[in-house]
Image 1 (spheres, one colour):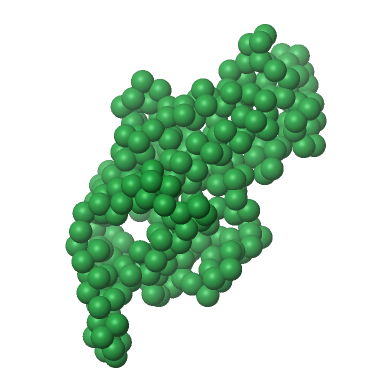
Image 2: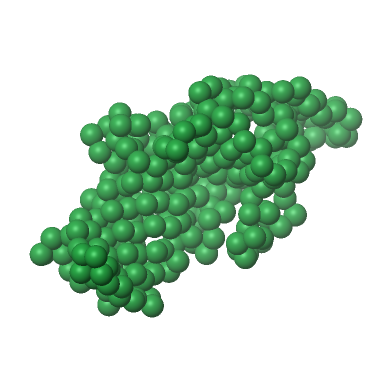
Length: 293
């Protein structure tokens, strides 16, 4: 469920010149130090070349797909890193991660602002609700090492001029995202976080678990009950509600593990089917009868 990343690849004399692989590369001279810095892009990623290293910032999901509606799991992350390495003719797997976003959007029954009003306080973080479609949880000080955000993904896509895939335009999409900046190794209690770390099974499981636990640590205000029973007209409707409730009551890691098993077995030839399966799970979740859990 990775999206935007900040990568730093150190430069040595053996580092190949990647300028020729960039779009619209331009040089800028730092008159104070005399350093020449090159700024360019690569399929939407911002690439900056300094004397000591190469900075790459942007959505790895958009780099691999036309948009970031389909966030990257550990398999597609490895695929994107390999593609980036091939494009720059540079080994990116060793690049240090200095910032990352982790999250996905959920298909909801109501508009996102309905749910944002039900989310209360989060331990050790401040709640900021600047506008109807966006909710932040972040530290009070200047250092924003970790931030949690809930927002209307459709509205965000419209502002950024991003075209949604077929089938998403009529859906209510609530994005829940974790953002980590600076000292990632310290925050995740690992020696270091590199591009290859993101696709490691244990690290990815840790991210999913942290994602879930952070959500459940938020107090819920006046949870809204949906009169789901009035919507049941057929046996199929009743079965769908039952399945939805069982899904919501289960250990969510079981769902994650099942998706991992499908990918390891290479069940689907089209990798988008895994994202479609996640979307179907979200569809069932909203039928359980309770907003918030």
